[in-house]
Image 1 (cartoon, rainbow, N blue to C red):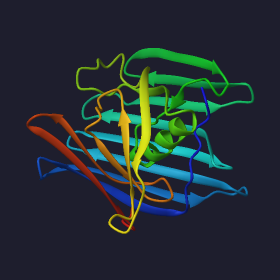
Image 2 (cartoon, rainbow, N blue to C red):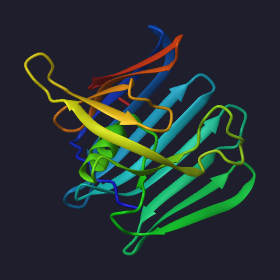
Image 3 (cartoon, rainbow, N blue to C red):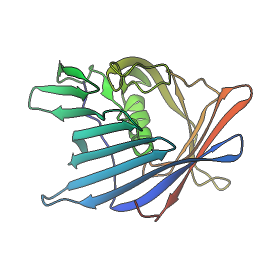
Image 4 (cartoon, rainbow, N blue to C red):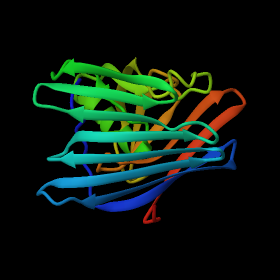
Length: 223
């Protein structure tokens, strides 16, 4: 598994989700704050939806994701936790909760290993940029959260083959780059707009002919 390179600056914001043009009640808030050590940042994200909440705490040092913890909680169910940690020679994932024994997986560190994508939109741009730097394609580890996922499999990582490329640079008509991120649920029709920091500003994804998702970032909103 490759450590995810992520360019972040202190700040905060919210991603708002629309479905077929209407409000969904899904809001994903994030904040990035300086940590105690030089070039270290603490990242906090929270995705709230009716009957569901997902939280993330992460540590970024020297532009690399070194540790994060995901907590997934459905109303009425036991929370599920996924811990990701980078060591000197390996990277590890441990999943606990949902009435199951703790489950661990480990990978040797290396440039050809999968990238870890910790679900939150704040990390979408860095994952795409990292794939592009590796030749535009590669394997990505994504925690399972699909509607059909059983409680026992929730947050267990699965390998997804992905491709990413910048289709249009920023110009006078648009201050953002237009990217494609193909694989998993996304086809070439899904559009992602990144700013010059690699931060996702907006995306649109047609899940089905009659199902259009749109997400946009509002910076400065508190978590």
